[in-house]
Image (tube, rainbow over all chains, first blue to last red; front, side, top):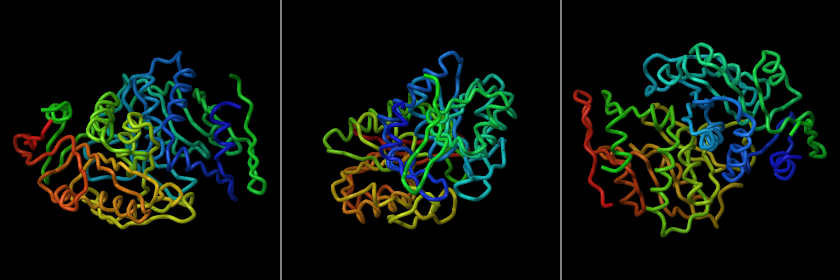
Length: 195
Length: 195
């Protein structure tokens, strides 16, 4: 197991309905030392890529993206989920449906911050059905920028999101892929990955 | 002018209705090198405080809080603005009204992540009328934890939020305080602060 899988085993809690609670270190309380390990690992996995911008989506992707950005020396853009009166001007908009929140959201990025010269690394904390990620990819493509890679902290491998994205030819790296989990005994099965 | 005031002068855009757009470096696209200067400055200003946790609120506070946390070696907790099905269990809830979004939100923190032993630094990007901040303070107090300080990146000094919080005796440090701004000529007047 890598450092993240060990942490998930230790502090993650499996709940009914294929819910994995990692709110003590990832998406409510955030362990910044762990985030530094995550950022370093993303840098290692995408070392061959020439990346000049990180794109993520509010809210829980932002912290990981910001710490990761230190290892790439690039700015972060976070997509917003609802229209804000401060977000005027021309915008890229994609419609996404969230598994967790069971509602549709518009994913919005100002056109000022994505352009055809951008080589983008997309970062997010979770990948399940992949709707949010599809929205982000759609926006990068609409901007004429290139998706150099996608870095996910935890992928639910028993849902379709990751496979779809890989089938489409994107370079997707998930630091932990969960193939199965059991709320009854708390057991979590990780997919074996090459080092 | 300090580093932040210089950046606001350079890249901030004043809009009608006392709106300051800093979305090119602070709250949509995020300049991580600037965030590191911000984190370092918060550490300098709160060097006398014994802080073991940073509390912020989604979404635009998260990046600043995470980078700042590196200088304090503490975890970050971010308050959520709407009920999520993943956020079960007992929660602290405060009602706040957002100036920007013109709507009421519930600010929510799981009781697991704030307790009477916590010495909290509250971090946020903007302070205007202070409703979000009041919600965060209310939650820290409800938890029996102590607010050691409040670090704000940009305070709109012509609105009441900052003065109210200072009147209440809280140690509030805003890295830039704007006393006036003019959409017609783009001029921004910063409050003079002791170094």
